[in-house]
Image 1 (spheres, rainbow, N blue to C red):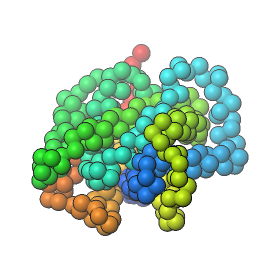
Image 2 (image 1 turned 30 degrees about the horizontal axis):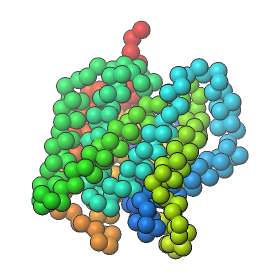
Image 3 (image 1 turned 60 degrees about the vertical axis):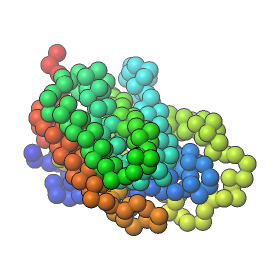
Image 4 (image 1 turned 90 degrees about the vertical axis):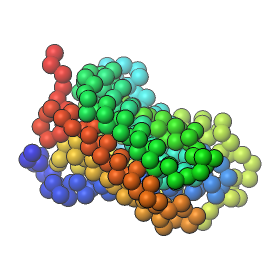
Length: 319
């Protein structure tokens, strides 16, 4: 594949995608730690979404293309549900703040990737993404099943009472939500611009997270007195913007397939490093390392021969 004019060289583009994956792992850890310190897990999701939305407002003021795309939305004639990608993103961010403290960043990432594999199968089969309806293929189904095996393998050395299967199931639900978020935001971006899809994502995610935060007690009495002083715990919103930017840059140069694989590699590498370095972290056990390796194999298998277009882009279905 020859990169598009003005695109980054292949190696650098893959590194950028991996940076997006590392940012995703760090974001989950920062949001979870912030929620724990304040005393309510959902607070981390609220703070992250609000700060990300503030950056989008700055983008609206600085980027005429974003404003033009938003003005063009009424003429796009998209179905109402296409605008709900941010709701799915809000679900993922909220889930992560609850699950990461229980199972660790690495195990959560493995569960997320597994849920994303099954979610991707369902999204493609239903035709919700811009590429339209895509068939179920043996490699993709096998990759999803292999992902479940990766989750199980990552937990084999934990006592039965510490398996936290409910938290892992929530992590898989979060991964499925990310798959749906990508499909819906993709429809908006295809009809307008990438900047517009990003802005609309935060526009729907923000009220969703705020409502969830109120219902889950994020603003219970005394929360403001427990705010930690460490600045890095408030970087979740900025990391959200970094993740989106990394994906846009990488996809332009190397396509969807290699971008996705590099993203997962970055997520797992960042998650394993965080679990090894963070205070009170579980560390990377042999079973967890094996589960991470099996997850990479699952993603590679699920991507095999799915890309029928140039450079990993999924070709649209024949009319």
